[in-house]
Length: 108
Image 1: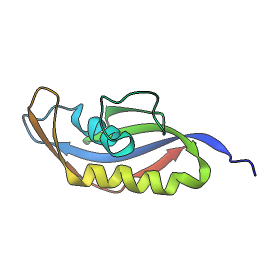
Image 2 (image 1 turned 45 degrees about the horizontal axis):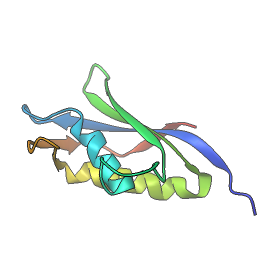
Image 3 (image 1 turned 180 degrees about the vertical axis):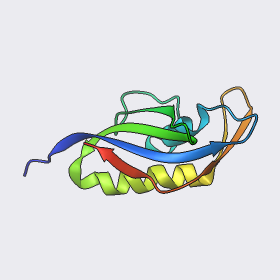
């Protein structure tokens, strides 16, 4: 049996508290998918995240590579990490944000 792999882009609308580090939601995604942002070896689910300003707010965009049959679970895990809305960064600073909508697949 051969698994089909793909590269997928997921987007989630978020808002930040005033003092939040805008890198924190991406860090939360990495913690969810890899266990920690500072991990040994390659990611089980290679991914990259960045913030886009849509003009009406912010979106966390995550590009992830995975087997097609794992995408739904990864999408759920990313959304759960973002709904949590909190991360203590490597410098000990807490960042909070609010998930403003669902995590949606925007391309494959």
